[in-house]
Length: 290
Image (cartoon, rainbow, N blue to C red; front, top):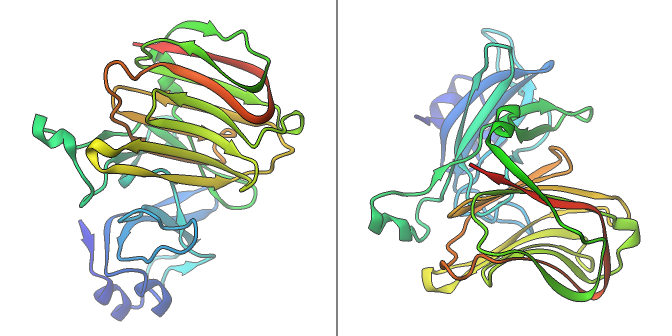
């Protein structure tokens, strides 16, 4: 469903600033997390600003307090939930043991949808467990049930890359990649992981950001999304790769980046790289997923 923002404002549910956030809020979801109320929704019509709100439409939340019969009192600004190219219309539910799980749609209306020629559009994200951090930010981690997809573990015997690129997997299919970068021991300008020629997930030291870059010009889908990093801290990544999607979980829930990908069949080799300097890993490898 879509929220009627004018009606919500007239009824005192939203203040003027909230009602001015775009022209429509799709798929509103309201729930309790920790000691806060979370209003999760997908606004359309928010202008991009710097690194924020770069997608055609966004998905995120307002945190605050609410009591029956009273207006929602927000604490802070709208926060995007996923910083990749494709995450929309998330909806949540409670598990029998009380965990709040959210699943989103990995696609974006009004963007190129090359898969429509095959009768489908996008896919559902992995189920993600929501938690509230000590500084009152909603964090997302893969639900623990995702581990049941794991098959064989393949460690990568790599500790340091010095201005080089190495292959770590050929014809990568469904995989969960685990990378632990030693930030304080890495001085490369860029270092990270690539899939074929179309996808790179890398640290850009000059921008001090983790970047997800996709390049599929044959489908009109090119561009970058990113989140800020503290370079002298270790960086833990869980990267889930499937036939046409990638989901990146940063530092155990600190951030997520999810995007559609369209590699050709002969463009699925995984490589680690470090350019203009060196980068060190304390751990690296991949789980094959069923």
